[in-house]
Length: 95
Image 1: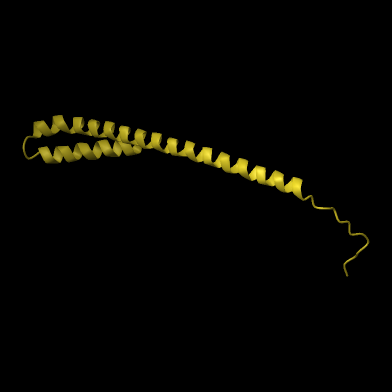
Image 2 (image 1 turned 60 degrees about the vertical axis):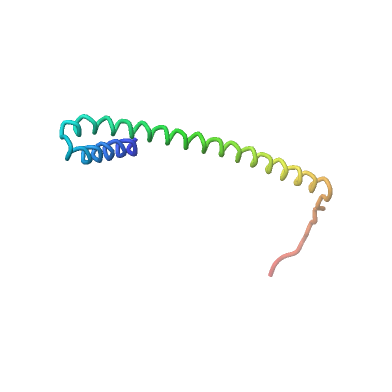
């Protein structure tokens, strides 16, 4: 929200500064309209970037799930192929 307010105020002041030498009345009328239009455009840009990042995040989630499944398969194959025998060490004391 703060970004949108900054865009609207900055664009409004810029439009007023550009139109002030021509006509003060035109500057006062156009400045709020230009600020609102710039804020609306910034909203669309932010929404577009958010949608694109969600698509990328979904693709990364699918890749992560596939990698986890592959690692679980490898771990199960390793457990089934060579079980490690239990070794009992009895009666040894450290000095």
